[in-house]
Length: 173
Image (cartoon, rainbow, N blue to C red; front, side):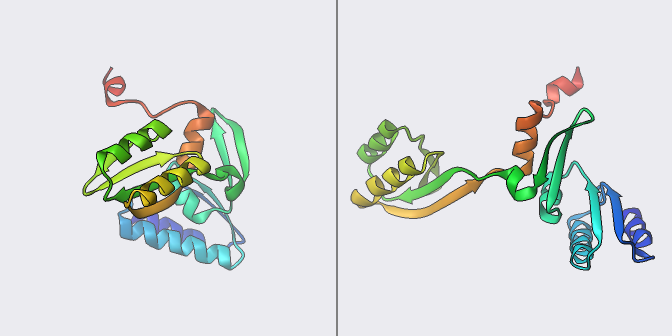
């Protein structure tokens, strides 16, 4: 409730600029959504919102422009779309194929996983993805999903900073 109260206080005088540090930290999902919706309304009303957060999914949901800071230095900044770039690959889900077809797909370079009653593969290359779809369809299989997968701000952050979150064993040391 303190987070919500702090946001309410910040909004009392209809500010032109709003500077927030971790506004959704410690909130339950309902509170996070409420804060996110209020920030989006502020943006729509012309308020400039500076948001600092480690919850990068919240940044993606609210911000138009981002800056990624590593050890006090900006390592990437720009429009969110530019920073995220294009897609990362394709997820293809299919069913109704025999093991010989799976072997053909593996020979093409696809890593096949069993996902319930379906098979699933992830590939980065669109021509390879189309080739996999053709093999599945031509063998009498059923294409269940063809999904372009996008990079997240978290993916970009980890890529740019070169650091991954500490594993539980390194925190204990």
